[in-house]
Image (cartoon, rainbow, N blue to C red; front, top):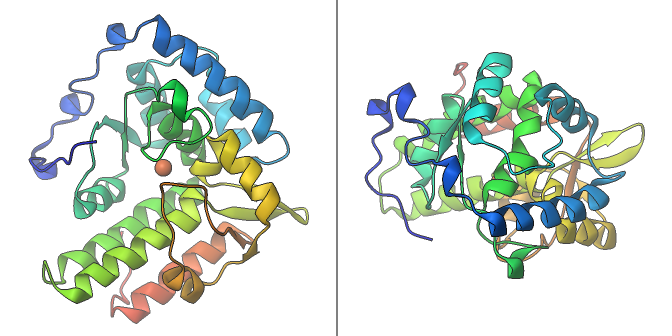
Length: 264
Ligand SMILES: [Fe+2]
């Protein structure tokens, strides 16, 4: 997976968000792998997905039984949530990633993972981004958390010198924060642990790993200190009681880094 180094977010026009995406380029192999992936994930999601995910899926009006056209999804998403998708195939510099999210632009890969990566993929593909994440953007509170926390993180990173040890530590901490919330996060619903994290909701293997490992109560300090790798299933899972807990953690971050004014 190549690194994207020439992106100038401030100059991207709305009409360019899906530049390079061509729905006609998908072949029968892509469509077959998509269907097999979906079968496995739908079975694994049973009893695991949180309410806001199921509601978002219904509002999106999709069951993803066919490989979706990002252009159609983008129209629906923008009309119903104000969020938009940007087609991105490569690894974004982390400041660009947070800046996009703070502007309610969700970077999505467009390739469909290969047969060897059915249960798990270290690199996000179209399936992970679309099936794992998009439905949650219909939950206003959750999607506000994603945009607002990304804005805060972007400001903190932007004000820290490039190449400094402090910046490296911040990038690591915020990667862990993202991983243990919107990728591998759990929320308590009617006393049961349900997933809002896209890595769980888009991977039959990750959902199985969750059942075997169990979970701990969410703690910002523990998350900042918990190493992880996105090259294998999550080593831990953390549960929140509601999305208010995420906003409380964001307030703690703002206080910790001197950003006490509200950032919208
Ligand atoms: Fe993701």
